[in-house]
Each structure stands twice: as C-alpha cells, then as structure tokens.
Image (cartoon, rainbow, N blue to C red; front, side, top):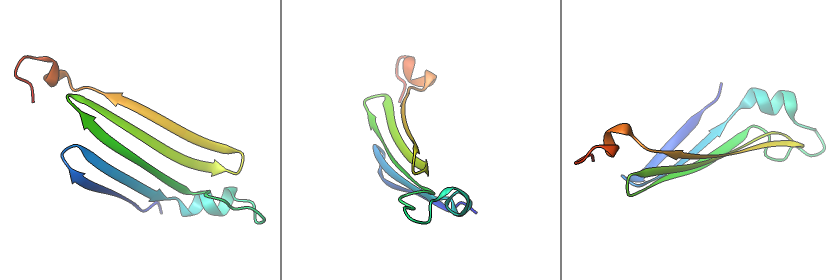
Length: 81
C-alpha cells in the first residue's frame, strides 16, 4: 500500500507526498529509521516549461533526488497554450 497525494495550488504550482509502508518495513534500520518510505516533491510551470523535483529515501544510505524538465510538443507550435 502506497498512499500518495498531490495538492494543486493553481495552474503553475503543485506539491506531492507519498509514503511506502512496505519500503519502511523492509529497508529501515531500527536504530535510525530516518525518512525511509517517505517521498515528496514539487512542480511548477514557468512559461511553457514544467519543472519538477522529487525526493525519496530508500535506506539510510540511499536516497533519490529527481529533477525533471518537461515541454509539451503542442506548446512548440504557434498559438500553443
């Protein structure tokens, strides 16, 4: 079970949060569980470019930071939204 949520604050900004119970159970260290199982991120739109960041901790020694730049092909055409 991995519950997650995305809160959209408008057309240009959103926050994301998730929690993986199984990852927490299998990969945490009892003495230092830290943020194992937790993931969060944010995204925003600047002009026609979407920029996102995500963080997830898999283990005390292993985290993932993800950056994404996105552009819709439809936006490349003249008059694209």
